[in-house]
Image 1 (cartoon, rainbow, N blue to C red):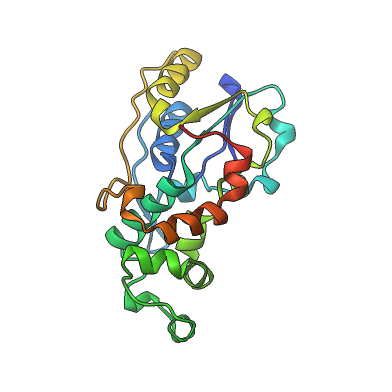
Image 2 (cartoon, helix red, strand yellow):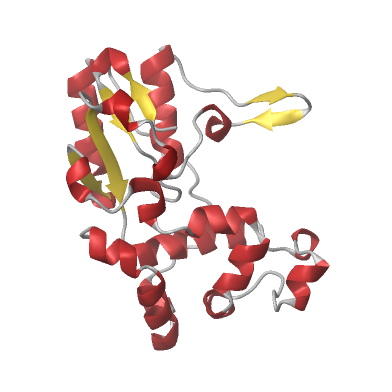
Length: 213
């Protein structure tokens, strides 16, 4: 569900690869007055994303947030997809050979793809990797298509303003950590024209619903 803090009338709708981990850690501190520490549960690691999942907008309990300051953070879709590739494919190696099923390989998935191959075969990787699917889904999946639903929509380059807003509304000395930063730095210029055109089509709903700086 969305992160809802009734005490301060705050509601945050997270989106993967848009400061999501960092903001969840901030909200954990707001609610619990100490930092989140990953722990082992049932022989597996219990991370901040287990504590605060990132649900699709259609499952969000909007009735609980009618009187809340509702906000989200958006990011240019192509830059967000590049972040997905850099962090999930290059850094975490979600598409290493050991993670690809025989069915995925038969469908055309190549292990540890370069950027151009990743974009060219994005549908294949999305079908056969839950992590890639989750981190590359359009932002409207998590936020809905109505920008007017939110009290404020922050841009990725407005995180300092967002942190200041949260400090003012909670009275807490909050700092935004820089989490999930592993992977090479990429820019849209690293894509071919064909790859950029494909991503513009793929994320058309995002571009139609939201503005990006």
